Length: 208
Image 1: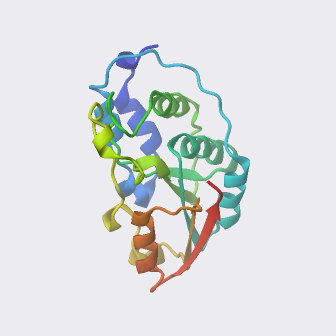
Image 2: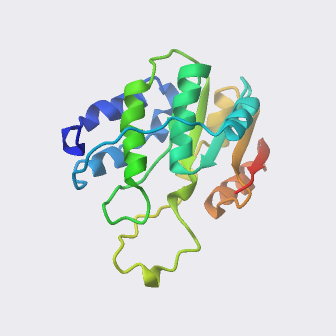
């Protein structure tokens, strides 16, 4: 099957279904941008969730503790499928990426996973959720002067993209765990610095 044959509205609805109060964090941007992406053959992908990351995410998740996991695009999609189908935890894909054939961010592998995994998602009813954001949304080490043939579609997350303290407390959460790489992204660190004044924050780092 090729990209142009994909019903992106269906893919969008599948990932969005069951998000309840977290719908506001699920963006249509990736799916809309794929409608004008250059056509290519959708290949099969190998499901292989990182067991170390998965274990940390599951250990931190509880009825009174919310989890945000910030890892590479492919890894969060692998985790999303796993926790949905095997742990009955609904993944909140917090991805605000505009896919582009010449974009710095977003690969064909990412796209294939996003599409293929939507077909494998089991419809679950749950009150457990984990938010997933792509660590490779931007790379501060990139020299843009050497990227003349690329579109700069990098982005950062702002406070409007992440749950407020009031939002979390209204849902019964007493704390939040951020599971991410050792080199934590600056945009996420700004969020942590602010909310830890008002709610318990546990920062869990994983080697790059």
